[in-house]
Amino acid sequence: MIQYLYLGRVGYDEGLRLQAEIAELRFAGRVDNVLLLLEHPPVLTLGRNAHRSNILASDELLARRGVMIHEINRGGDVTYHGPGQLVGYPIFDLRSLRNPTGGRMGPVDFVRLMEEALIRLCGEFGVHAGRMKGLTGVWCGPADGSPERKIGAIGIHVARGITSHGFAFNVTTDLRDFSLIIPCGIANHAVTSLEREIQNPDALPSLEAIAHQAAQQFGLVFDQQILAVESLAALRAQASAAPEFSAEDTPLQVPAEVARLKQSAERPIRA
Image 1: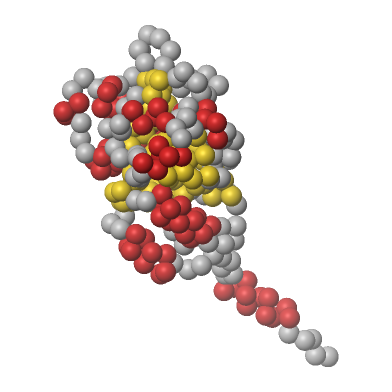
Image 2: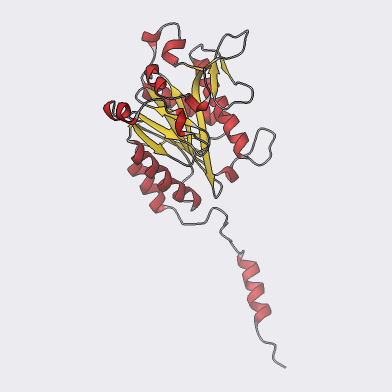
């Protein structure tokens, strides 16, 4: 099962803290797979493979525009988060999932399914999207040609089998803010948004409504039941009520008859 929450606008520091909290709960088996959906105030994030030179703006300019910088442990280079962008943090236990061939889910399989969910989300709005060979993420372009404008960035981290970080999908994002960086460290590639790609931008639903659609696509591509959770408080209450088992442990139930025979065998034999 995938439980999802839409949290609205959340500071990046708080987003990191929530991921760490829920990752611990998922590892302990206190919650199911959880998908956090939200948006951030303006922030630049540097992944493990990032180069500071890919931030083009000066520290003074970033400070004037209220843009924060965070160095984080996801894969990838530099990316931008800001208002109008749907950010998804799947806190999933890879051991609870299977890849499309039925085998164990690995990080690459996981990323490909995230891409597929966003590609299908674009399709819900009549926007043709796909992958670029050798690159991670989701790109838009003509149906009869190669995708060329990036609409979704993806970068994850996996620890103890639990995923964190995730995707950033441009909905009504101010694309001028991407001029602050070389997005994902790839020079001369264009970025786009759902607002720019659809024929009637005025008909675009709210970010929250699109978040619900994104969650449904995650359920489909991961072949999991999807369930909306009312609030963080409700998720925490559920976690508090759940028995605590390690993700690698299965509670052992010994049948009563087996227990009785074991007790009989352990009784001393009297001559």
